[in-house]
Length: 399
Image 1 (tube, one colour):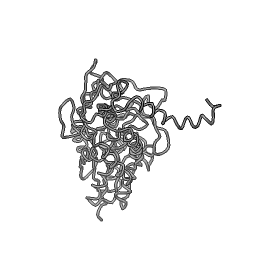
Image 2: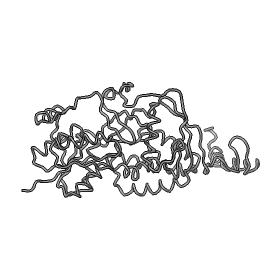
Image 3: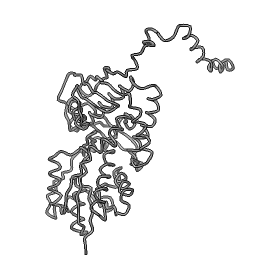
């Protein structure tokens, strides 16, 4: 009898390593290990993943590099929308999961797999993101989640791997990390206690610079275009450049507390220099180049876009409609933003833009008016006060 094919969304961590071996040895599946890379894996990590996948019993390992697709179909719009969940978190790792799921489902269909497996537990958001993506994209395939369905403990998985000849060097660390192009999340340790914050040692990137320096980030139609006057055709490389500069100051560290998809409150630390600097610069440039109502309505739809990304609703058709509005809003968001970096923080300095609405022939705020007379100003003020004068003429007792 021909063996069933299963594609395991393989990160190289404990849960997915156990899943590969268990499905191959205990269930008799033909296991394909697929590592979907959205920018969070180094070349060395991918090499080790491939080596381990075959040791665990996979008949084939593939790296599915979807970093560019992730930028083109998500990151770009997150920048356009200045998206920070609860005004804090740049929706980094959570948005990556959707594209990892899409890549794995696409690969599973290509090889004619009968099942897809992932290593999510039953207590987090990722189970929803992976399952929903697979249900929509590959409804004919079985979804296998051993860690969730068998309620496995970490020690059980380690012992199983060791007993079957795989040196499971998955030491229980104080913190767990999810590294991505748009930020690194930090779980465990002091985060489990609402009173405490994270110590310096919890962060992967340490502060190596003191004092201050200026950072110039250029945008064309809302997309990052240059960093310190160096033009980048590859937007991912531009993001990495900003990350390297900002991380040396420890910029982008914070704590996010929010509502999970499954209904409980979640707390996570993160470090995200590139996303916080790029979003901060982009939002600052928009204040110069967009009208009041462009900014207002874009913020409304962008909030929904970020929420839907977090809630695993990326495939909802309205997301394409929101993206179209975000793209159109960026037609005049051009220029270079100047930021001043300091340890753990940054400030906005100014912008250079041909689309700068502050520069106009009608007047300078607080200085001189050129587009109206003083009599016209007094008439305008009297007109806009009319609703208040009507109301309080009737309700004098409320004044």
